Image (cartoon, rainbow over all chains, first blue to last red; front, top):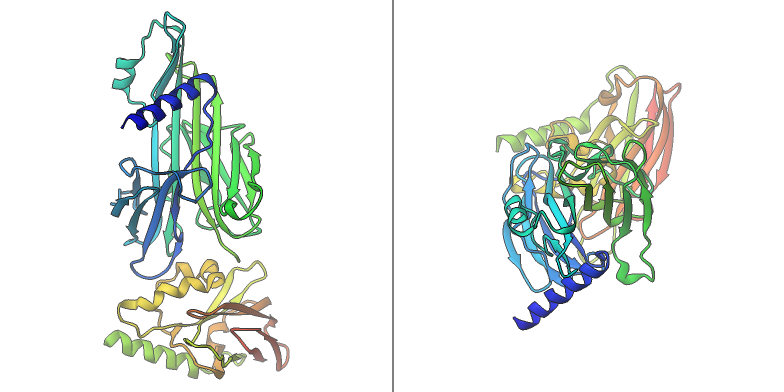
Length: 275
Length: 170
């Protein structure tokens, strides 16, 4: 217990001194994304690790993980289990079409200084930016108070039969990906186009990083770096089949008061098949 | 049970269908004999692709149609090109399209009725095989429709398919 506290304290110190370093990546990995048969099941791993899709650090807690089905309704995660390094669950694809598995949060975050010059921020690591917590924890008269509209979203997609788009509709809150190319229709050597939205509007100049899985078995990250265009779009040509991790970051100053900035992160797992 | 009989009739109709408009299209497909410890007959999809890869006509989908609870459909996606180009939009089984898997040897399949309404143009016959605990292979034979004269064209697979011979007649 003491050790945990020490780690949390260390993490807080690091984060408050430097910009948050996203060395650890959170991901949800389906074992397959394209399925046939009348009533298929898919298994998923969910973890936080350095090496993409190699669970060796922390299991992802499943409380915030949700799924929606082709009809836009919530679908229950089956057989959830949280182990040392990863969580697992199954999804029963009882309807034909596309399912989205996701974890998302959005709200106000803040940084400020105390009278003694100590830097503070809220929410802390792993905390959700809920309005009550904000009211309770953020002193609105603090020195150098900076309030940001923050959002984070983590997703993956699986399809039984033909791909459909109801589950992919944007919530228009925070940074989101909407398909031009369907995320379960990705093939090696072909280009896929996705649109990024910030609060429902095109996110222009979002920084996007795409990394193939299996980095354990090569020397470099093999990262593809992209920036979204004036329509919020990026086009990715998949170099080879496999599982891919996509991470996008966006920030601007077009926030609603009391916030002075907007910041969003979006990550997703995609499967690219050979043709 | 009733459904099963319909399926068998569908498969029979597929094999025996004759020329509809006079023009004929037939395929002789070789399933190779493989020396492997665990052999399962391959799933095979046959279709006609347009130049842009879209499906002009589905000809046959040979899979484990007799498994209970339609369990054979679980592996239809392994014929991944066919699945992507149109298989995923079909609600299998389909009478006249679904058929039982075929063992090693040469199999003659006549599809004249399925191409009767094919507009003139350049096409490819696509034959894709996927085998449980085995491999996957796609063989393509380009052709023009309607045929000006009787003729044959062929292509060969390397592992999962032998020679695929397309026979056309005006």
